[in-house]
Length: 242
Image 1 (cartoon, helix red, strand yellow):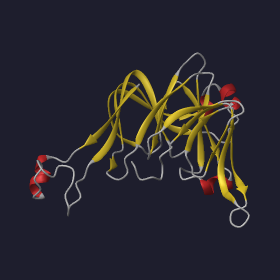
Image 2 (cartoon, helix red, strand yellow):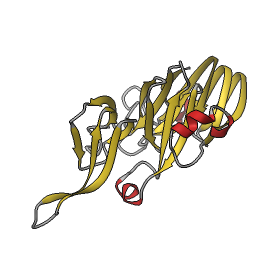
Image 3 (spheres, helix red, strand yellow):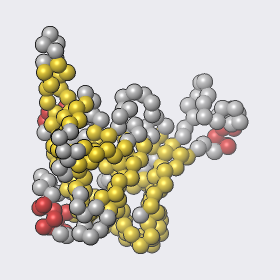
């Protein structure tokens, strides 16, 4: 499974009909919005992809379609995920291309590929997980009420683990650039915003009050991560840097 992120431009006819000189105002016009779109194109070569429900735009090729259901395979690994509910999602297999729904300018995402071994279990915010290869077991966790208040990326966590002796690929989408960092034993990460979009098993997450905000000092509620593992972080989210 390979993927390509494309930015789709207006046609020459669109510029002509809107009386815009493409040579000088291709990306910006002071009075008119120029409609660019971003679209993910997934290439399959005798492989498969699991995508978020409702995210398909079109597909073409020698492809088969089915619904991923957690309880249909490797139930013993599913139980080991210790998640709370089962997860169903569309699966496309074979050889061809799968296009996801285009995103309009102003809602573009940064896409980060993550390799997942059979020794790792990643958990992603529901709004962050975009798609993954089909050699995985997936489940879903409901966030605690206090975590829902602090999170800006949905009410669920998607748990992903590769099948035995396989390496899977998952792709996350974030509004700011993301990267994977490692948290070692004895270290702690404290953030006053929802900067962590995913983490591996071994990391303990909490959303709690740090001191007493106001006269007593402190930061109010913050995100706290402890343990040992990997984190998917967006350090510049909220800065308006794209």
